[in-house]
Length: 303
Ligand SMILES: [Ca+2]
Ligand SMILES: [Ca+2]
Ligand SMILES: [Ca+2]
Ligand SMILES: [Zn+2]
Image 1 (cartoon, rainbow, N blue to C red):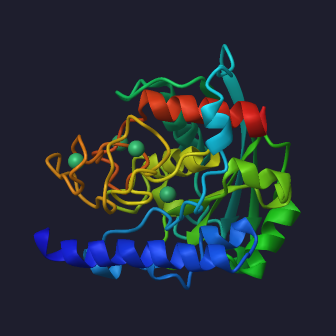
Image 2: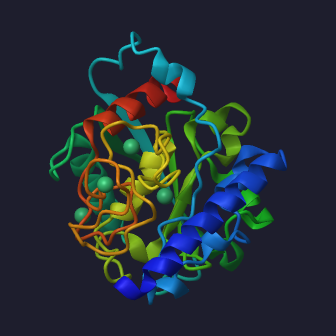
């Protein structure tokens, strides 16, 4: 996998550039998150078929920087219960047409609970996910979904349920080689209707996307929804992902190489972390620092 490394480094640089250009343009934050025109939105070709989880970029300045400094503010005690609403979009009532089974949705909630509780091998967080509702809509324009489009906006406005604490998951055939995308918790202030997590219908547990069929895409996207950045955010620069116990990483990992070490700073790349891009088989963990940041994000923006 050496061959792709220089391209990956370049793609990471392009991502950072695109992010800073977008930041300067003073667009609403949601526009920066998943601009399909940004070079970082198309790494699938450069990685010989590997799919990108989302291409979400971290904002230039961490909106939680101030609250993170206020360390005296402890994360809430006890469990944080998150109602989950699935909006299933489909072409027709076939598996290929996006009509995922109720069992798959239940399995996906179980994967969320195992992952956020630490049962998969990482740190435990207080989040408990409870399936609250499922709706199903046959509509090709919403099923074949492209990030940042008017169709996406209209769909969310028509279908979103619950308050800031409700995880609205749209299950569709995501275009542009994307496995998912998400919005950050601080965006609920200006755009609650847009608050959502997307997941490709074939990236649910048991789905047809080989290497991404354990349900970890939704775990990753929910990490963003709870305020986490990618482990490779800001590359090797000190700001990193605003979490201290995740070693810095120059670019996304698309493999399970446990000896990967792209930054001279201490620690090997966190390729097993849910907030990297590794295949589902090798990602299984959040760190205590990430759990703490998610708790703080919950208290600040969603509780
Ligand atoms: Ca870090
Ligand atoms: Ca290192
Ligand atoms: Ca996994
Ligand atoms: Zn992501």
